[in-house]
Image (tube, rainbow, N blue to C red; front, side):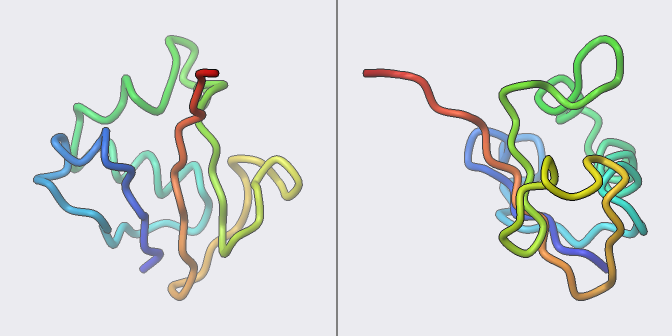
Amino acid sequence: MPKIFVPTIMRKHTENKATVDVPGSTVAEVFDNLIASYPMVRDLLRGKDGGLLRHINVFVNGDDIRGLDGPKTGLTDRDEVHVVPAMAGG
């Protein structure tokens, strides 16, 4: 199963797990299954339209999904998905 690396801000909604193995063959499927297991992460990942929030960056094996196939990016059992909220400040 693909492994999702959960950012610190979301861990309180994943039983304080830093990584979660989630089934799915695309980034979208993995997020659907993550939300099915941990419903509270939905509002931290997706907007009201169901799309990924703009300030959430997702990397598969170090590659930004925006340069791949976005949420349709295919995954294998060995893939690592990193969820990285954008940081603001100055």
